[in-house]
Every structure is written in structure tokens, then in C-alpha cells.
Image (cartoon, rainbow, N blue to C red):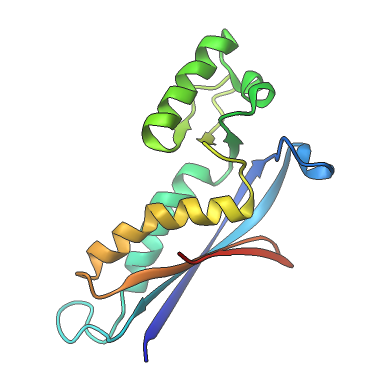
Length: 172
């Protein structure tokens, strides 16, 4: 037996899937809904989270930090998408893109507004599909949930709704 709690947030972001054989290779946007599910065998027996797996307010705050703040009203791009990155480059594209790729390689992602139009850009080392974003955001959120719950709860799933009819789930 276990308990689960799920928190949902929504963001608006653009992306493109550069190798897609159809319309998703074009720049477009989504109203993403993201659900994080935490699981525990028992609820907290004492303290500020008494009776909880993990506080919903904390889960929302962590999702805002990891997903909303860097990605909402921005563009999510693959580090390998040369043509797209060149459009965002504030100056000489090759040098800027090299710096972006170095940062992505070192950190696993890059959030920057150092772009041609001071546009928020979130660069990742993979195609920004719903499936890959679900895994990426899961891996960034999981340690926060474990730490906040004192080891009682673990993030068990992350769901990314790309449209009201299409979702991707990641469960390790």
C-alpha cells in the first residue's frame, strides 16, 4: 500500500522538433500541463507535514522553480539545432552557439536571455519532445522532493500534457 499526491502546473512555451517528418519541425507553441506525482509508503507522523506525503505548496514551489520560471513564455530548443540557435544569437552565431553548447554540456541545460531579442531561451541536450522533457524535469525535481520529505517520499512520475489529448509520462 502506498500514498500518492499529484500537483499540476501549466506553462506556455514554444519549441520545434528539428528532425520531425511533419509539421512539428516548424516553430510552434503549446499550453503544457505538467503533473508531478510523489509516492510514500506512509504519511509524515509529525512536524509541519503531518498527515502528508509531501506538502502540495512545496511541490508547487519546486515545479515553479524547475519548470515554470525557466520555461514559461520562453522557447525550448535542442542544443544541436544549429539553424534555430542562429536565429536567437545576439551577435556572431558560431561563437555564441559554442558557448551555449558548452554550458548545456556542463549543466545539462541552459537558461539564457542573452538572445537577439532578449527572449527567454531554455536549451537542452535532446530534442524537446514531451517524452524527453518529462524525463528531464523528473530528474531535476526528484532530489528536491526526496530532500523536502526527509527521505519519506520519492517522485514516482512526471507527466507532460502537450495538448489536451496528448501526454507523455516518465517513471524511472
